[in-house]
Length: 243
Image (cartoon, rainbow, N blue to C red):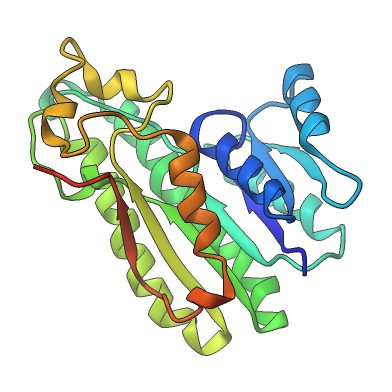
């Protein structure tokens, strides 16, 4: 049976790949992005089929009211919400003492608080239907130690901890919660972590290359399979191995 899936950060990178993977899997997707453009709509139309649709929902994840209104638009369609995938995030590499709190707050607004708000909104319909799955995108940076990672790494560590505890809270309601923690992935954000030395992040990778967004998306979709229904409260590291 087709699943109805909400994906944030759907306009590029991992989020875009996740949308495409779910469509390939025969599912329907509400693709959430900050701003609907002609190009994004053309992309959504191009991957939709007679059986499976992609609908663009636009709202700013830094605006709680906008998040609520965007979610209301989805709920008004009166369709089951089977899966929520929180992909949207802001990358950062820089010294803590040189980073303004305005920038830090923005990173946490998107990486953590928007993820929490989307979860809170999704829990309501999922609990009524007594089923649902939430997948949050964390990062291997959550447990890596290197100069410049204190802000981004901490935001993603919070996502991982939130995921595990939320899974325990929601299990009695029939809702599973997991996270996927990608390593360095070939997206626009990867340039943030490469800094002045693009080879430096790869030196920590046993794989020796960046992951592709589709490799992350494949894991996300696989976690929605009924065959993996006993996987709950886990943070799945997808980095090809570390060294």
